[in-house]
Image (cartoon, rainbow, N blue to C red; front, side):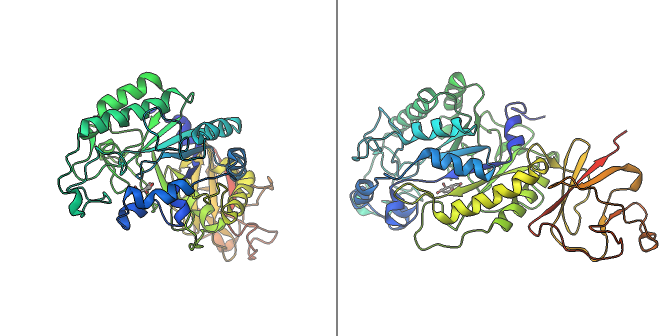
Length: 435
Ligand code: GLC
């Protein structure tokens, strides 16, 4: 089995979390990479830092939205690549405490989310485009990488690492129990030992033995890292963190065994608040992706980019509430559920928890629904999960040629076609006889 199998137990049960990307970049209506993309200097970015005054930020309202969505954990960007901190750090003045705002947003967030019973995670960028000792020359991302004025820049990288480790130590010592540390990210030669990852993890675990840590101390969203190999490194982390896609079939290690994984993606197409992007994913898409992910043993970490004033975009609030309505009725098929011991059905997905298989029916059948892979001899009962209504076996001469498949009908006549009770995802709970 894996390292950390027990540490991640709650995580693999939780299945659905909220990512929050917030920082000065939201003021530019841009994105968190804006300094790198537009080659902005610290001075050119300063108006965004000064303008970042999220007075409408109400962490309790955030937490209520997350709870209403059925999210069980959250991850907030304590520091992103721009180096600006949402927390009160003794190691820098480049933070919400010193740009005229004066509120420790990490503290407000952890307190509000904990109060809602939601586990708290912190994102921390390994990259830092503000710190003078972060490498510039030859770096593929730094805003000044092509700037001749920086050609002689000679950073003392160890000094940066001391700062970075120091800030992480602040995060794991000043805010009570932190459930998740979400590092971002490794690239090129900037990985593992380069971050003094062993020392970093030892320090973190010394303070917080139960915290779970993602795999990005040695990889990025575009890699799995050594957690999937036969000999994971000491900094392999506790789960694989693909981003902006849902890996077909989930993530397995080299022996073909499932490993914990979490697909993170944006609600529209940007992490930070992006004014002109209204390509918000619909409740239906999110419900179906969540179910696909769970059917492959993964978690879904859905990002919301708050507006620069601090509130979630109205579109996100509404969509989250609708996903939550579905989870209110069907959560049992998601939380604590995972890969079913059955081939994927053509009409949707199976998830499973103990002796209960959940059929997620996305496509309306013609006539009775074929519960493929399930034999009548195994079935104790089938019910509609949202209201407990039993579904009758569709046992008729038409189904005779399909032994080994259990058929159910959504209405009284087993040969008739009935609309699905829930067009987003109709869930059937099938109790199996496991003896
Ligand atoms: C990428 C980006 C970053 C974002 C992250 C989330 O690695 O650098 O902006 O925070 O993905 O996974």
